[in-house]
Length: 179
Image (tube, one colour):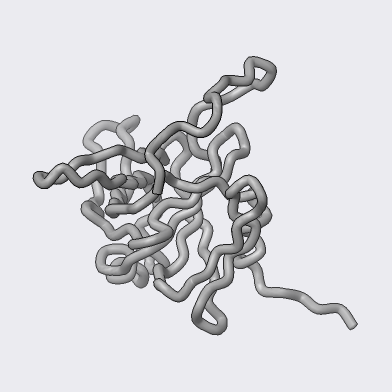
């Protein structure tokens, strides 16, 4: 692998961009999941290893989801990436209580869609696991309340772009075949 730049890095001033996360999807991490890469290196297709496996959309509180993709260095000079995903869920009901062990103890691959429409995959090689899963009731009437989930994982690459959100949506909904 060459560690030399191979092209110019430019910015395109002809596009609007908006910060923030519009959608979060999680699916169970499995090293046998496969990803078909397009000509530009974006992910065109995701195939989950287990039959009937699918991705799940997380209905988070607006303005609470964010992610980071940080370069880190270990004590021996090796470098890796740390992917971190944060979001809050306002529900305190049996749906969330029935998923608490999975969210607390499971390992996932995440796709985040930012408000500019870019879909980015996190935890593709090693998965993300919860580092925090806490509930806060708030004290005053206007305080934020809900479950705050923080997931993190060590990765070998920057978060890759998906062709678009349809790539992840293809594994969230059951296929309907009309004869």
